[in-house]
Image 1: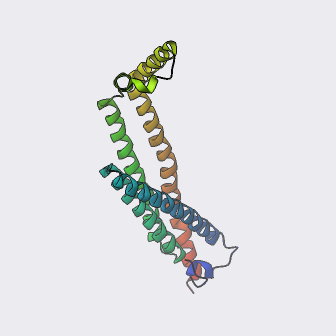
Image 2 (image 1 turned 60 degrees about the horizontal axis):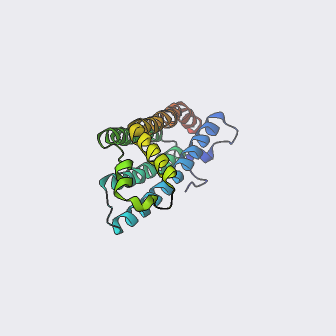
Image 3 (image 1 turned 180 degrees about the horizontal axis):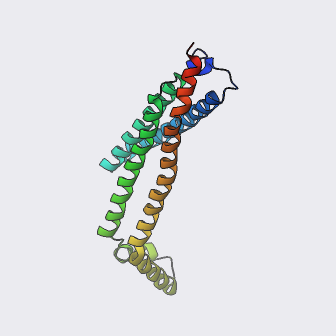
Length: 195
């Protein structure tokens, strides 16, 4: 929690450098709380999946990564309120670390989609009771659609996770650039505090 005695808040509100740093503190705060919410939701899902016998290392990794990102976002935010230039680096590298983690996860998911294609047709043939309430014509149409989905499954997976990588490059990359470029404003604010 920021205190009025923090160096950033000792500067006049109208000082341009202080406004720029305050805005970065606000962005870091929104990011930190967003990642905290996602980390908690991921932890709850991890516990529920573990209780149902569906524990995966990927889910644990995602939960830990989100928790670490939230922690470093809060830490960098606090450093900015102290006008510590290192806060810009902490926040920037935190975003790049998240970008790397998302890219690895999405890349792994794309490879997994090609190695283990969808077997929806085989699943429907194995469990005909799923189609029992449909007419013969509807069952044929559903099996045909399932075949098309099976055929295009790797492309669907690659397009979905590829889009997430591109969005992450834009968002996390943009956030990293933003944080790194706040360094000069923090240094300018430090100069205004020095007698």
